[in-house]
Amino acid sequence: MFKRRELFPLASGLAGLAVLTESTEAQAASRDVKLDPYKMPAEMREKYSTRLATLDRQSAADFYGSFRLALGSKYQNLEEEVAETLTEKGIKADPNCSLMEAWDLCLKDPRFAMKARTWISGQQLMWSAIKDSLHTQRDQILAEMEKTDRMGPGKLELNPNMEVPEYTRYEIHIQPGGYVGDPLAGGISAFGSKHFGRASANLWNDHTERHLTFAQQMATPEDGNVNRILDMGTGFGYLASSLKVRFPDAEVWGIDVGGPQVRWAHNRCVKLGLDVNYAQRLAEDTKFPDGHFDIVTSYILHHEVTAAATKKIVAEAFRILRPGGVFRPIDFVTVGNPAYNPPKSLTQKAATWQDHRYNNEVWTLQWKMNSDLPQIMRDAGFAKVTAKAMGGAFGDVVAVKA
Ligand SMILES: C[S@@+](CC[C@H](N)C(=O)[O-])C[C@H]1O[C@@H](n2cnc3c(N)ncnc32)[C@H](O)[C@@H]1O
Image (cartoon, rainbow, N blue to C red; front, top):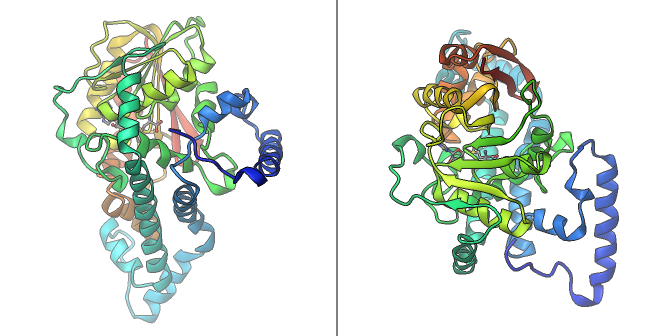
């Protein structure tokens, strides 16, 4: 992103570029993404790219990130293997055991233990590769953000005196420094998001494809009027920027508790020439007037906040939406959604525990297992709430204010 590195030595540069162009075109043709940035002009495409300082650093981060995700296909039938191992060892598992007990039982199987250890190591290595790389450019990145903080087209509002809630300070998914504790947190999160999606789905996020797809699918008010949109917990701002691409005439805001997050998001949009406003504000206290927005959305915010914060955020979304406005928080499916399937088998329970305890997803159990999102929305006053599966582990819950 900052000061592009040369991909190829000059002598072989043109040949290399030809190969690169050919392969990206082939991918573009095979992708079913309506707002595919590959179809953008080359300069725009370059700006949508996410690359670390050097090719070796980028390759390392890519390898760790993808390796971790590809593990699933290498470790199938673990449920049967764990059962066999336990039988061999004369251990009888209680089908009603807790998540943590299931984890302890599954670890007795060497293949389960290997998969778990490798996944966590892959995650740790990916984050440290990204963080180390960005910090080699730290002064340069901070100087550039210092400059773009005051540039348009969109506005940036930082609030260094904001009281950051304790629950947002954790190193969620073991991201070093978390969202608020590293001045380059926005970049660290953005590079980590490259591997959203699954290897098999041919929908990675190298050029924000995933966020562009969500923006394309965004539910809109029945009267079709979309003048103001808010993305809560916007992070590095990809959903907000993607919504601006879909709704170019709307005023788009992205807010996040992390100053480094919105700073990064703003810097990127300045370079893209996208008029998106970013502000360091809390989703439960947005400071916007009543009835201000036509659409309020978020992407994977809620499983990273407490159940109590979720209730406040839903109430805040209700307050700032106009009548007929649409609230669509995209996140993992929860209890209360007909698509919700609680972890039942030993390996499902163990994987849920691993994510919570060792991937440091501190609040995710409160979200998935205890926060009945459709009911919370109805309690907040939303008139029409629909809940269904969205694909992958996500739930599609849309609420309309009467
Ligand atoms: C998993 S990240 C999602 C980032 C982004 N929406 C994306 O597209 O990936 C969750 C984001 O929510 C932010 N966040 C957590 N609690 C928040 C709160 N109470 N108010 C605003 N932002 C919050 C975090 O700082 C982080 O950037």
